[in-house]
Image 1 (cartoon, rainbow, N blue to C red):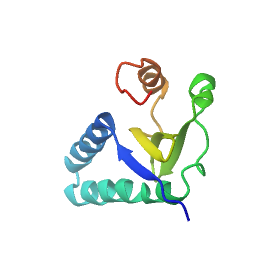
Image 2: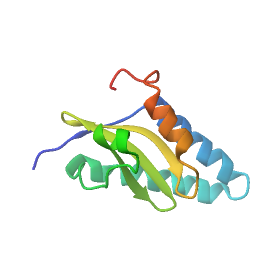
Image 3: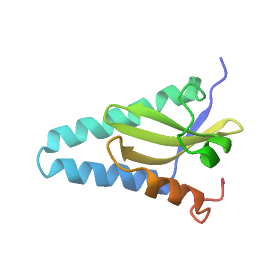
Image 4: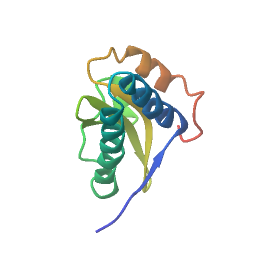
Length: 112
């Protein structure tokens, strides 16, 4: 079976940190569990990177951006060659328009 590389980019790491900080205000143990669960969910991308649905934005969908559901969170990523680049983690109840604008900005990563 072909294995893909998973690369978590800067803003996705920041999202994980921010998610942990927010949850740890009320429940530090839960924050740690959720961060671990989010990171563990990325293992699926190593073997099945195209199994998650394309993002619900026409332009970003054409560019191959996908969303992997991780509990109440979504992992936004894109496969380029043999690497799944993880761009963001967002809460599924959140308005995604800011995330879409961010991804469309092209100023944040050379992989674009």
